[in-house]
Length: 127
Image 1 (cartoon, rainbow, N blue to C red):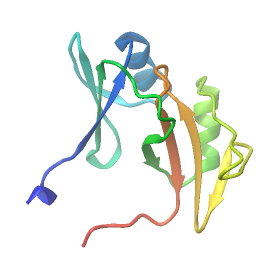
Image 2: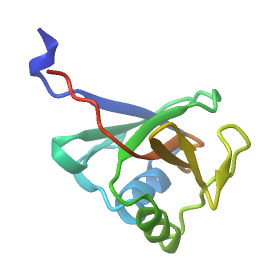
Image 3: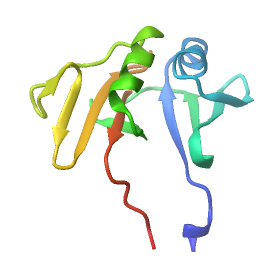
Image 4: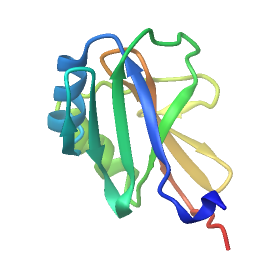
């Protein structure tokens, strides 16, 4: 039943203003809605992301990733906008990019510490 509806990821941030600037200015997402407690952004292919004020989780796990077709180019672009990428031992990153199977990934954090990622590789689709 829900396969017909838009799914929107919601991330919790401690301070809306720096998070809004990060997602809008540094990541280049389109601001769709702005309230005192939350903001909604549009991303590619109709996807959307909401950020809301609250207490963040310290899990350190990726909470959202973007499917990209040129991971090196996106890393360069985001780095030029002030985004700082993470280096990891597992999976091992080289120049911020890890290879895992046919896919490659890179990770960075938003101002609230949420781990976001980039993924390059075949995209699975529900059929």
